[in-house]
Length: 534
Image (cartoon, rainbow, N blue to C red; front, side, top):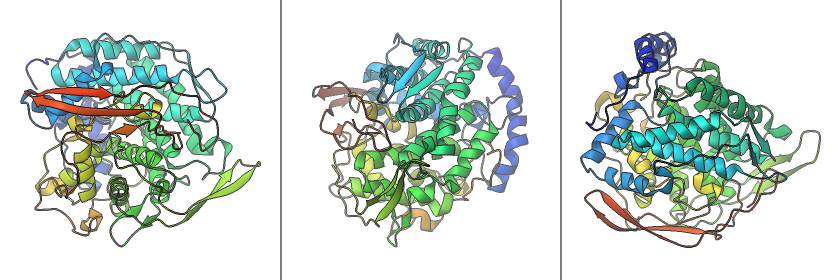
């Protein structure tokens, strides 16, 4: 732990620490041992879970070991961590003193006075300040994050609007839980009140969607709708030590009827080791969103000892490789897919996606570092397309760096800082990296470990290639990354409204100088229904 960050140990964290080991044993033994998992890195620090619970805290997108790694690497000026941290510190949301503007009711969607941009800006400010605190130890950033989160938990009572309210619940629910996870042991953080907000405002909306899909045919809503809800319910379950919620998401990931379950999202596995991503037949922005959300679900589960990354012979790896290749401009196959649409007891219809949509190779989201590092560094598998696209996007930014509209805030980002890791060697390479948690139901991890056939690459596992395959010719590997349009989670294709073109002008002594170009444009209201547009 670096010297400038001497954490205050609260009575709450001391109580959690005393019960953590027993909790991990009582709930986690059957899960961790059955799957043959090794203890995670930094397990001692990550063991701040509530007494009687198998869930380790911090343990959503970042574990204690992850946070210590970031701090140590940045202090040492190591690449690419220094560039990733500079990207964070340059973001306007990451500044201490950000003042929250909490609302009693948040509206998203047509027919309401939309104010959800207030929520997502505050959520990203809380997350970025909390992450910055863990890296540089400046308590002013922790104070800011806590103040933002406390203000919202003291006021927010409902999420309203058109069907887009389900997106608001899912996206901002998983995000605000991750922000809070980073400051949950602070004495000034209102933990119980925050839990109440998650379990009464965010999670019920997402759970309702997974149960009845807004009273629509289960396939009416594309993949990313399910995945936002799954991310929210899983984050709530882990944050609140709720085994049943975690188990429901694991079961839905594996066997759910909606298009967000892994076999429905990735319906066809090809002989080339790539697997078709269903929403590639819709448009690139939504496919990228879906991959990022599925990665988020897998990462949060992994950090609790649940291996969804490796489920069904690493099906997600094959789908992510497919989207990466396609997004880089490569040719991919696509099997025509017809989905039913409509309301139960009302109108009905169908829609066929017959081919992968056109792509803009400069479009990006801050999703690739997390996924690429899992498969190539934790697992030691070859994932050449993931490696190339992750290098192209380096250093990844976060909310506010990818356009002013909501799509630029769908991921928390900063993966270069947060998820770059050294390659695991030996027995740990194929083991679940979780903190000893359990699903509360369902089979252990559902998946076992990634096998050689899970490399999703004709070249097989990269056992002797540190970091996976190197970027190939024309991969644009390097720090600049691609430009990005408005990647709205519910947009259809008007990606030219605004271009966030962030270029790197200098990198020296850990200081990244950024140049921003382009003009912003106010976000327009959306229409309702299952295929919204901006």
